[in-house]
Length: 308
Image 1 (tube, rainbow, N blue to C red):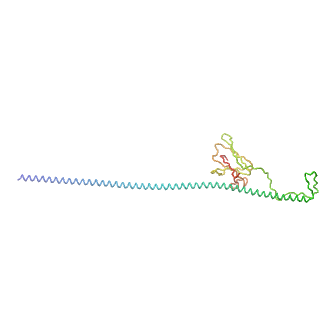
Image 2 (cartoon, rainbow, N blue to C red):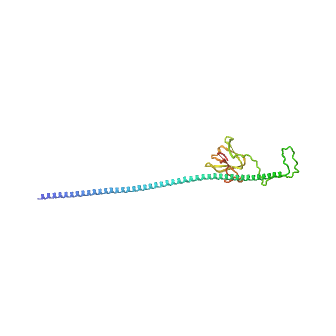
């Protein structure tokens, strides 16, 4: 009986121990599963956090890219605006330059027209003076002719016979003549008598003679039919411009000499022109009455690279 009871206790103890071990194993297994679930959740959370951070980084990167693109677009638009503005400025500058060139051309043309008009006015005044002088000469001649005719009529009415100077009969004495000699004279004063000589055609000739190795003699031969000026003009776009020097010459042929060293030769051309002296003699008045001299509707103008 005691043996059966001891066996029963042993079996019961074994079952109890087995139950305790089974419960401990189940608790351990549950604890491990909980640990694994916690780890899985932590890993999932870490992964989700990492994904969120990457998403935020990508969002920030996209915003930076968009901002960079907007800035680049703004820079491109500003560049296009500046290009359009530069083109407008260049077009405006080109138009202004063209206007300036036209203004200079008009100024040069106006100077030529003024000089031509002054010369034409001077020619007209000389023509009027010549016409007035011719009318005075004609009036004086008509008066002298009338006096001569009256003298001939009085000679015919007198008793003094005509004597032909070719006759062999000597002329009678003049003491008994009843007619007094009549002095031929005019109520209009006779114009001043001038000796007419052929005036030289206005002209300027330039010659260069070598004197030494690097020295030259420049001679300007000037022909003028009245008081005139030799005027040296600077060149402006092919036309006479600023006056550099003036030299007075009279009627006839004059020579103006200048020496020139080869190293000091001018690199810009000079217009050597002949101007009339129609105003106050010896005072150069241009613009004014002292305009250029014309020969066959051409201005007397020589162009050279020479000293003045």
